[in-house]
Amino acid sequence: MNPTIELLQSHRSIRKFTGERIPRDLFEACIRAGQSAATSNHVQAYTIIHVVNPEKRAKLAELAGGQAYVHDSSDFLVFCADMKRPTEAAARAGADVISGMTEQLLVASIDTALMAQNIAIAAESAGLGLCYIGGIRNNPAEVSELLELPEHVYPVFGMCLGYPDQDPEVKPRLPLASILKEDTYQDAGDEDLVAGFDETMRGYYRNRTGGTKDTTWSEQLKPLFTSKLRPHMQGFLHERGFGLK
Ligand SMILES: Cc1cc2nc3c(=O)[nH]c(=O)nc-3n(C[C@H](O)[C@H](O)[C@H](O)COP(=O)(O)O)c2cc1C
Image 1: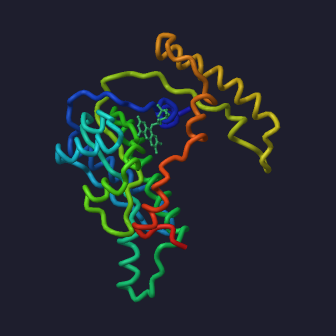
Image 2: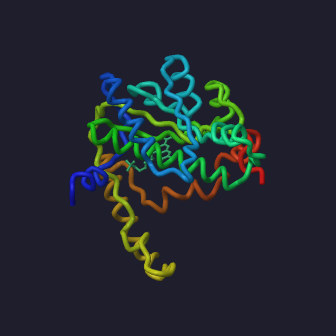
Image 3: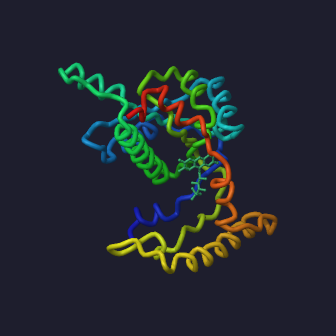
């Protein structure tokens, strides 16, 4: 193991932050590290909105489902998939552009996620903590309006950044054998691996909550597969000019 791998394997989301501000040079270094991520065809299909206005932060915390750390972290970023800039650049260069392709939605969303994760790692390497905020997709149209996002740009997730004021345990992950296969998708042993992981997670939750949370990974997944999740997303993405064809 080297320090980078150790850092990666010690990740845990941080949801409580000290009031200490992130120095601007460190903040910008993290964003540049994000820009260094691999990007599909060098398209760099993303824009970050650094939300500094306190009222906007408070509104976003509310829109994200009342997540206080959106407001209380040192910095809050909204990561937007952005096909506007590259499409317009191609058009200016003389292309007869086609927009709204589902593949473009994938490219922009993947680029955005890779860039964000580089920022996350850079931040953690400097002693910062972070929490992704998918909750902004609870109300993506309102978030877009608040941040004045144009067509061909959509908010993928947010990220709280700051100095940790908590030291949570690292959350276990699935056994390697369940997510790493050779040559073909062989899932014969997966049920047992998941059963074992369920007990690992039960122990983790019990430990984290002093015994009050007694649940498993599989139990936790149930609501994700028994209700329609953010059913507005398809219509919203279409309205923003994504995933039309
Ligand atoms: C795209 C994305 C969106 C997330 N959205 C939220 C969120 O809205 N609120 C929250 O508290 N955590 C959120 N998380 C954090 C996950 O719950 C967390 O990463 C997961 O439980 C694993 O825990 P760990 O990060 O501590 O290892 C999000 C994570 C990702 C990758």
